[in-house]
Image (cartoon, rainbow, N blue to C red; front, side):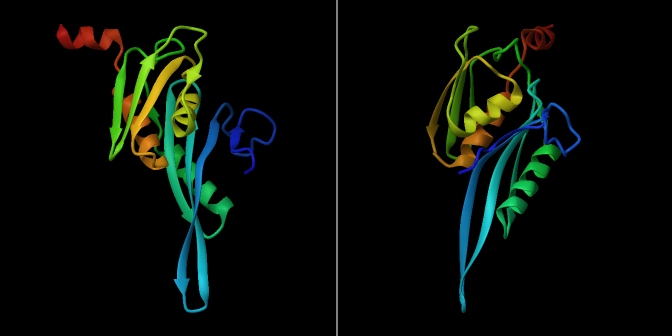
Length: 167
């Protein structure tokens, strides 16, 4: 498969949004059996982020791959959420869940790197997390894992937020 990383800050940025990071996580081919044979369609799962704490995921379907990718990235840009970061890592441990997928995220010290794979890595890169340890459990479905990662990031709270709640 071709390189699915697209950083919109360099040459070829035709979206008009400098600094945006786009990654196609998964492309699936579906077949509908009709009288004349099979009709193929494609679905795409994409992650978009600015690398500074905003990230979104999108899903798109079309009869051609480029159209499915375009739909999924547009959907991701519409559904951006802000996540709380502590430097280049996350403030505390968190477990994100979505359907059967579970993703455990643990903060790490500087220099550890992004220890994650597949869709989890794409979401964390797009959000701007550079040092974190992860463990994906349960479902291996790409959509469930990506949503579980995003749900985990949504649960993050900074120390100041906890103090404000207790006061």
